[in-house]
Amino acid sequence: MVTNTRLWLEKMVVGLNLCPFSSSVIARGQVRYAVCDATSDTELKQFYLNELERLLGANENDIATSLLMFTQGLEAFDDYLDVLDWFEQLLEQADLTEHVQLASFHPQYQFEGVARNDLSHFTNRAPYPTIHLLRQDQMTKVLAQVSDPEKIYEDNIETLKKLGRQQVEKLCPWGK
Image (tube, rainbow, N blue to C red; front, side):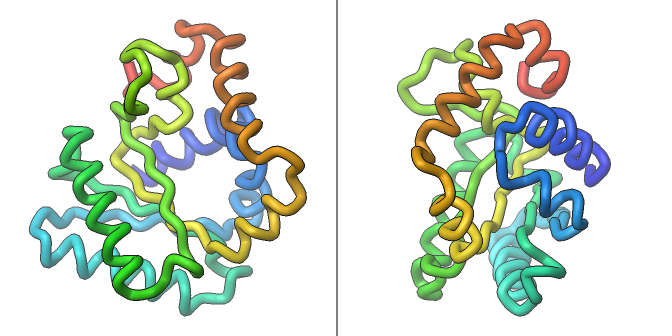
């Protein structure tokens, strides 16, 4: 699972520069890969809270960011979105939204209101249901250096369109 996620990061995220901030933390080994086999609400909540605590308790030079990968129970995109919403609520209840933000990735990621076959969905498709914990202060620093942060997403879509469906699906076969 971790190997497949690392390959996805290398080929898609870094290789296509879909996230211009990722290459340095990956190169320095500052990404934590956490695998969750839990299916019950209690276990999922505990896993999430443990990972939040681990990230916030670590020096950012050791763990800059964490990828939480889920092995079971979140294969259906709607189920995944329910857990993502729940995790957002837990983050708010713990008053941690100014410290951590969540990014979401799923093998069948689907932006609301966008045609099902649109290549834009591949910007958020990953081999496994994944929730990315990002340090808010780091994001603020890197985004301050970008004149138009929204352009990153637009550029990503253009990159995928230039590659074409066949090449994108070859790089991201789980997202077909």
